[in-house]
Image (cartoon, rainbow, N blue to C red; front, side, top):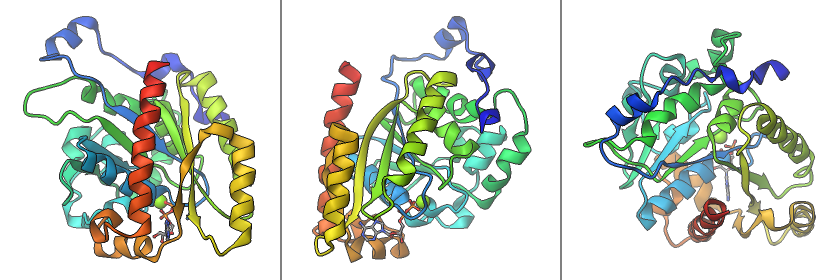
Length: 294
Ligand SMILES: Nc1ncnc2c1ncn2[C@@H]1O[C@H](COP(=O)(O)OP(=O)(O)O)[C@@H](O)[C@H]1O
Ligand SMILES: [Mg+2]
């Protein structure tokens, strides 16, 4: 694992104050970058990235989802077919396209995505021991910090991570202001969490001292299942106020929506899953204010 954590000096950032001044057309508030991460698969990362993104866009923000999972579920779930993925996040991280080149619009106003393709699964091997390998995403995001005419200025960037603590997830953590952790209400929920928190600590020590934990969102809650209630209590005890008040219920409409290439908020705005994701967005915005103020 340690070779995934090169030191911060090797980030390969080349911007100089003069270059920044030349590029800067008007001052922009840089986007807030939130990595949606958990090394377990099937816990609701992609569903959260898509639907939190949709809810934030619905509230009025320009949002970019970055698909960092070779499976490309966020891209498919937002209705981006493989032919429309002209430039993927693989091309961006390997240095063959800019992030802006890769961005495509979704059917949701103000919601955009940088799609992924299966090539992304080979990235770790291809980058080998390159010194800036953990900073590829951070460097690719840097131009978004500068407002330029005719280009979108994003308020939020949500990075949908793969189900692994590999170089892709480390790139997301190195680039992010904060991580948001979906946790499925199931017996083993807490088991992977300490390993995830350990990785966050390692990233803070080596790559990104400012990385915050935005919060933990409990997903797929089933009120009829007694175990779910116990898991909620355990997670709240372990993580305290880091756990969002909002709990995402298990809801069949949420699982149906991706097969129509739609966020659940578009597929069925009134269902319990949509309502929960709207509440989560309100909480996320509230915490953003607190994180940015502190
Ligand atoms: N709240 C929910 N209710 C019902 N099904 C859900 C819910 N959240 C996610 N799912 C389904 O569970 C599966 C795994 O979710 P996903 O977001 O893809 O997880 P991950 O990205 O962590 O692997 C998907 O089929 C998804 O549609
Ligand atoms: Mg996923």
